[in-house]
Image (cartoon, rainbow, N blue to C red; front, side, top):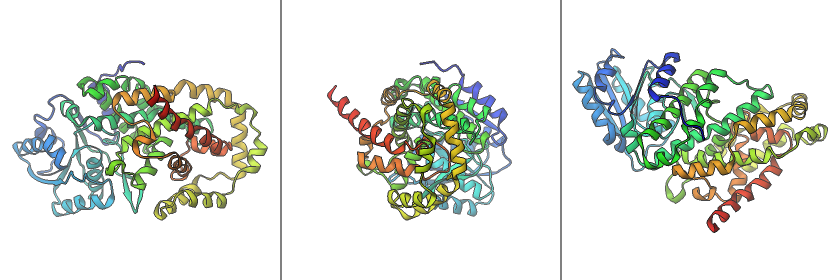
Length: 458
């Protein structure tokens, strides 16, 4: 696999220059020294609200608060419990919103990983304030994105917000984070492989053109950023810096594109189903990156199956005649999504993307006529599920549904349900529209389950 050629500091500096809202970024070892003066140079605020959970505050929050005090800012703190860990929900963010209302001049500073950052990002946006993010783990890709993925009314959505005005990451602190957290970040970044393939499908069918700049930020160096999973598992600073650079690049791409399309496809839709269901293997709610890691292998398995099909012989008329109407699809939705709040939002997403017969007829003809070229384009982009499984396992991330307490029956229902929860076009939509989704699920799910058995016997 290719090595990463982008120097983290230089690469992220160029990203910042192109950013509309992010003013500065500091990444490196020991960068928390003098962080108070750095933050003060960016804002006229005389007061700050440092928010973290108990773990992240111990890792970096105390040092940030002390530096801010030394720089002459009044410091208030809000330390959330870490057992149980903060929940990525609007209701959890309300506590931060209340603290900001009580301190109308305070600059919010998020000290933590994904959930803390998203909670503060949302609260700062609600309060119409800038905020600063201090990362404590390379665990996710949303530090500098414009959205906060939070549960609202039981449904996980990406709520439009603003990115931080400054991003600070001490690589030594990231490397000392629990190894599972950085493995989750590796899983989140690995998901950009199938997410890119989903965008290729949408681009080829004229549904959503690829944004060249956002694509380049994520995809041009992606395989390099994923090239040292063993180093990630060992907490090596060079590997963590490389991983974090990739995660940050994804955030900049989302800011530039103003949606999560550069970062998210069927892999995330699978993960979101499990997160909204409250999946909690061994009593601990599943981490986003862990769910995405498993969703990535599953999505790549679907692509592996798809690339073996000869769609140049697609019987478009028969597929069109058998295609279910919206009412029929809504009935199916109700049978596979059993939580009312999720089903209600999913019905709206389905209605927004359901193709009328004329549109579907044109699309099927296009798929048949261009399949050879499209298949080659996908094959050049993708990694095999076997390759990805090896990489994720080397990084310490889960790869098999059984590892997160998902059975074959549950996985089958998940794949049917994931089709409905986002209007974004992915491989799930492609398989549905070509009439292949039931066959793909019937073939792929037993193969995934069997792969675990074969690994245990080897």
